Image (tube, rainbow, N blue to C red; front, side, top):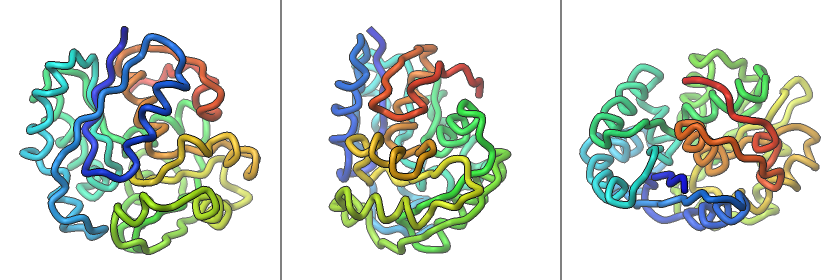
Length: 243
């Protein structure tokens, strides 16, 4: 049994994770511990506080008791708002507190893109424009070329959690650009696990979504190879990329 420990801020789309666990179809357990978000707002100051060391450390003990083999901070914006170096410091502190390999969803996007061998990516973000730009800067710091960013300007994670298939497809379509080799949807508050095959069929290219890459990153840290085509192109390749 491989146990993945996820620290998830608040309550929005955490039901994606039991769905993903079921689709993996093997001896993998995905344990989710909810962290305190403070103010639910897609603003840089609020997002920075969401990923504070104290908030993350508060959930670590529960994951260790659950027998987690790796821990992932399941928040994209709560990581990338700190910048590349700040996000690395955040993950190092998390690994030290947990005594486990650790990462965050923002890094998962970079590692997943490398695994797929894509460099040019388009971003469909639920965030306001200023927050979306910070994600693009983070991706560039990780060596990716961002062909374009579509920002929806949604104010809270709670609102994003209500989006259905139509809104998600519309976001992905408007974000896509012909030169992009993959489309990235970065919010872990967005329900995407059920829509990955349709998204990739519609765009005719890989689509990387936050909850998808979060689980993949945990598997990478735990050195597990899982083939699960229902979870998109990313899960049809062995995750061999190194941090």
